[in-house]
Length: 353
Ligand code: IPM
Ligand code: MG
Image 1 (cartoon, protein in one colour):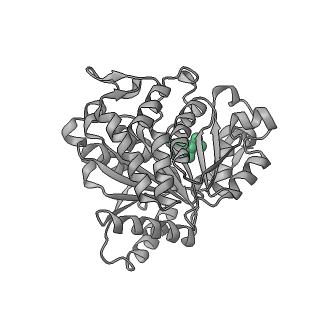
Image 2 (tube, rainbow, N blue to C red):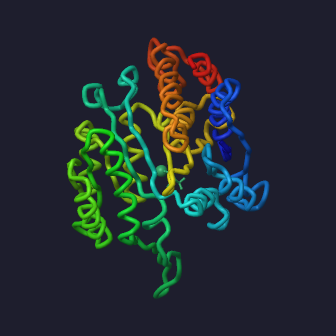
Image 3 (cartoon, protein in one colour):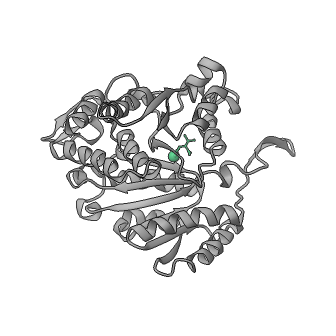
């Protein structure tokens, strides 16, 4: 298996290094994994003048899967928009056609106290958010900032074609079939035409999955329900921007955004795997970031791209074990547990493996 490794900016390098430790263990045991590194985001701009250098795109296209750290940093905020780190990330998603973004929000029982919600509200939480990733207001044209009637206006276009909605709906229904068979489609159909189409197309696709119970919620209500009674959800499917927001919100139910991995898949389950958190420039280089989301992203890689469920389970069980043993990075630390560094956490996961 060829793996493109793109650590990116901020804490990206240190968290990816821990995930690579896990991959090295599997390699030593005989797994055929080849890793090649590339630049993306701010480091891509610094090294090659482009947040998604041609060489990185080529490497990623040739690879079976991509492991990504994070992109972005305040030093890049003043660059022309196309040169900013985030654009590199958006472009690689688009270029690789990674339209289905899977973001699980799972609570490890021992971390119930680290959530900002009451333990009884979040204990047992296990939600899968399926976020559409290559459409919506993120990519719609026209977009820009220009002068109209003597003042600046900023504009973007929210747009979905039915084929875009249909393909992500199929992914979501497929996942629901393997889980609790309940799917909630989230949109804003009371206001937006784009959402009206979304809701209609999802309802059409539902006919092919009679066993799945489909519901729909407006995004504002969904945001409220997520903190009021998050356990009502099994699988959520939603568009790019709503999924961006709701997945950050859902992550805090599970104690820390530092715990949550993600998979971004194309039609053939080729994928890019990354933690859902960002580059956290404030703590970069201090060896205190939580590498578990990145390590769990490797587990997702085994599950979805390599279809090796045993190895995926093994990595996830190793993470469960270190949590049960009481090891915590700062973001999930609570009284009575053992604080470890980023690299220390990586070592513990390797030991548990
Ligand atoms: C995410 C991030 C990205 C997004 C940013 C960094 C462009 O927030 O993956 O959720 O908005 O998709
Ligand atoms: Mg986000």
